[in-house]
Amino acid sequence: MNSPNDFFDPARDIPRLHELARKRIYLGTSSWKYEGWLGQVYHEDYHRILKGIPVLNKSKFDKESLSEYATVFPTVCNDSMYYRLPELKQLEGIEKKLPPDFKMTFKCPESVTLRQERSFMRTEPAEKNEYYLDPKLFAQYVLAPIRDVFKEKLGAIIFEFSPFFFEQGWGAAKEYDYEHFVADLDKFLGAIPAGYEYAVEVRDPILIHPGYDDYLTMLRSHKVAHVINAQTWMPPIEEQIKRPGIVTTDRIVIRALTKRGVKHEAAVKRFEPYTETLEPMPDMRRAIAELMMQAEYNQWLFEAYVNNRTEGNAPNTIHGILNAYDELKRAEGKT
Image (cartoon, rainbow, N blue to C red; front, side, top):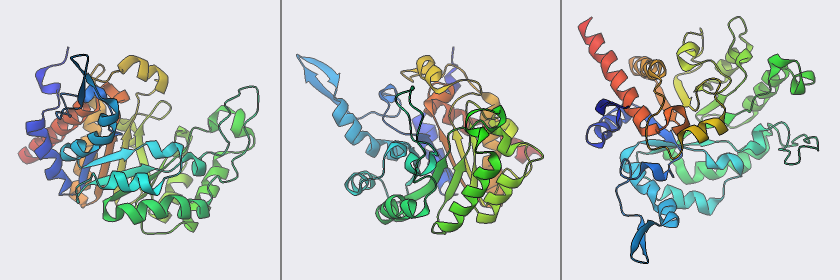
């Protein structure tokens, strides 16, 4: 059972979110088209009358909900671009819905970050992706359109890499180890246009294991952020932040996705339709709040994106992070 203090409170939380954004501390969600947030984040009428009964007009909701979302949260991670290259007309339609001070973060399309093509026929081996970490493809077909459309509204560009499972001794590890990956990524980051908020999200814990520094050192050399993530195979955020050197530049980027050990499909089954918090993660919330404090103290840019599949309802999770941050601020004031 959730206590009253566990729920997203628009009257209190929206001013807090926008006050923090003025300090370059941005909290938002992964995507925005969730019907489970109706009555919580969304209060506009997205219904139509069918045989005398109001039913959700999903087409209207999908087209118009971002405008209302942007009055609540100051940023969002656009996950949808991961599966296809951006289209100019679609980008322009999205940008028009956003206020001037909004930040939209994008996941780079898998066309750039998947080493092997997706194999939909499991009996056939996956073919190598000829555009894997291709700087020209990225610059021309990914960066250029989103840069030209979003300009100062552009947040981070996240390069997400599916797990290679380097530590398993099978599969990709037989021909492609973590040293190959770091070398390839180093070359790629050195070849793409500089001056943007690049961030790298990995899902192989060996890359941030204590005693192995090549990955984080390489990111630091390019002034690229390591995405501190809550994810199936990665150590929890509260453990990652203890790793020396985990912050690789003057930006902190966080993605809270799933609890460690819980796969995406299982989280979907557990939490849909995302109307309530089912499994609070107070240690994660506090760890994110500690990173907010660190960013504020150092005047760094901070961007955190929370998924419904972390605890069950992303707005409630953000409410909990704000409360944890306030508690840390009060404790700081007493010392």
